[in-house]
Length: 180
Image 1 (tube, helix red, strand yellow):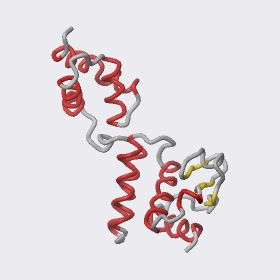
Image 2 (cartoon, rainbow, N blue to C red; image 1 turned 45 degrees about the vertical axis):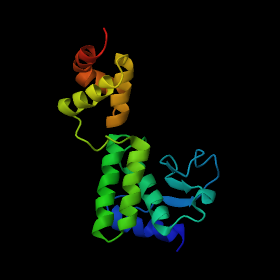
Image 3 (tube, rainbow, N blue to C red; image 1 turned 90 degrees about the vertical axis):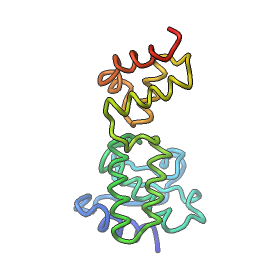
Image 4 (cartoon, helix red, strand yellow; image 1 turned 30 degrees about the horizontal axis):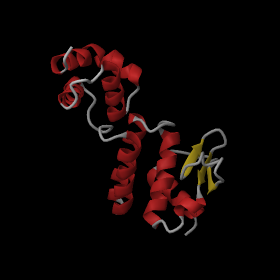
């Protein structure tokens, strides 16, 4: 089966409301088109580029997961953030429903390797403070800025959002564990 055939099936099975006009394409791209990655979703030209060298020897489930991964960038968010991870989780659930168990497993592995282990954990005060306290208990020299960056990466949000939502509480938690 060609990548075009996989793309067509995936569009119907996983994203039936996306690209109804059939404007998007998938093709093998060069390093520049793929942004030196395995694949790239270029919404400016409505094309998904796949690095052919990167998928040589890849199982069919891996190729399908890669195409789904890239479509999720257009459907949700350009980066590997919480919004993208949530859409990937929906796709993984769909893969399980239609019997593509290996695709589901690969999609979830992409989420955790690309976005972070906590990206699907509820982003609330209790979970953020638990995470910060775990960091601080293992590092008595933990600085506020570093803690906020780690929280942002773990939960898949921006540093600005974490600061806005929980900055004061994070600072108070760190103070309890550090020498300051």
